[in-house]
Structure formats: C-alpha cells, structure tokens
Amino acid sequence: MNHGVMVKVRNLHFGYNSRNILTGVSLEVFPGEILVIVGPSGSGKSTLLKLCAGLFYPKDGDVQVKGLNIHNAPKDDVRRLREKIGFVFQDGALISNTCILDNIALPLRYHTRLSESEIEKSVSRKMELLQIDRTYDYLLPAQLSLGIKKKVCFARALVMEPDIIFYDELTAGLDAQDIQTTTGIIKDLKDVLNVTYIIASGDISLASSIADRVATLKNGKIIETVRGMG
Ligand code: ADP
Ligand code: MG
Image (tube, rainbow, N blue to C red):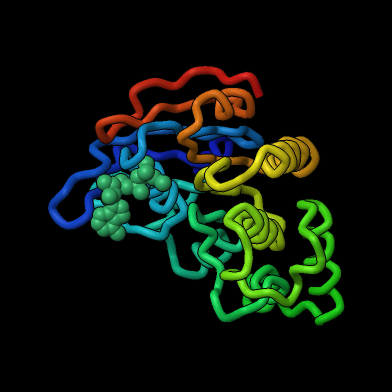
C-alpha cells in the first residue's frame, strides 16, 4: 500500500484489437495535484484515463489508485473506491432520455440512500458552483451545447464528493467564459477539498496554466513530465 501516491501507473500496455495504443506508460500522481496529460489527437489520452479509472482492462502493467489495484482488487473494495472517483467524459456521456437534474443526481440515487430533498440540495449546490442555468433543469442533453453538457457532466462527477477526478478534454467545445469558470472551479476545489485531478487536454498552453505537472503522451509512452504554472 502506498498512500503517498494517489494514482500509480506501472508499465501499462493496451491496444484495441491488435493495434497497440499504449506501450509502457508509467506515471505517478500525488494527492492534491493537478496533472495534465497532453498529446496529439489519437495518442491515447482518453484511453489512458479510462484505464486509470478501471473502465478498461490493461494487456500488461497495472494501475493502483489509493494503494488499491483497480483491476484486480476484491469487487467490494473496487466499488467503494469507484464511489470516490469522478469521471468527466470527453463527449459528456450523459443519459440521453433523462433530464439534466436527473443526470446529475444519478450517482446519488445509485450509490446512496439520501432522501429526495437531500439529493435536490446536493444537486443544486453543484449547479450553483458550476453556474449552470436552472432553466436547463428539465431539458434533455441533446437540447444543450457541448459546453453546457460538459459542465453538467462535471457536476455529476462532483456529486459524490470524489477524491479524484478524471477530466477528459477541458476546453473542447467550451467558450472563453466556460473555460474560465471551469478552470477556476478546478483550482478552488483542489485547494478547498484537496481533490486530485488527472486531466487530458489537447491545449498545451491552457494545460500548463492550470497544471502542477504536465505529462506528454506520445507514441504510446509518457515522453516527458514538466512542472506547470498551476
Ligand atoms: P486521444 O484521446 O488522445 O485523442 P484516444 O484514446 O481516444 O486518443 O484514442 C487513441 C487511439 O485509439 C485512436 O487512434 C483511436 O482511433 C483509437 N480508439 C479509441 N477508441 C477505440 C475503440 N473503442 N476501438 C478501436 N479503436 C479505438
Ligand atoms: Mg480524447
């Protein structure tokens, strides 16, 4: 067990079908840190995030989150760990036939026994935090821009008050105001709640402005890690 490291990736290999995407990724992320993974489109950033969150099974190597092997630990341990991991998917991954309010409330309904009024309170707080307009409450994801969907997805990732957030593509589809709001909240939460972030981004200048460290993924490996300005 190594609790001094939040996420430890060791010699990770993964491919889709016979095509290798990651060929020996190693990485350590420390508690309370913002680590941004940059790399060209198609380099495997989304794949790496999903592997770290336990959504895919690696071909070789392993991922420890809070000292627990996320792919091989006992099921109950992994389930408890997952409750403390938030994931903001690149495309939002909201449930298409379910309104915004219910999309954000979903993890609470699934994992907790909170009353409807407690759920409503928690959802409202996150929407306020992310400045999501309440006129969207009963709209479906398809009725919203990608920028709003991304904020809704961030709110959903926050409702369980996670220790770690995987955030896939920070800026894609967001206008300047949304980017400012989102990056501001990421930094605030890091300071207040000590949330650890692993963010994938194609935007290197934004990445270094928010990151404690920036790791570059290329040709299946992390080729360099440098200090950011966050
Ligand atoms: P990035 O997020 O850096 O743009 P991805 O992790 O999305 O990269 O994808 C890495 C490579 O894997 C790309 O070439 C992509 O086309 C391919 N890929 C991604 N998902 C799948 C999948 N489900 N099946 C087959 N190939 C995939
Ligand atoms: Mg991606």
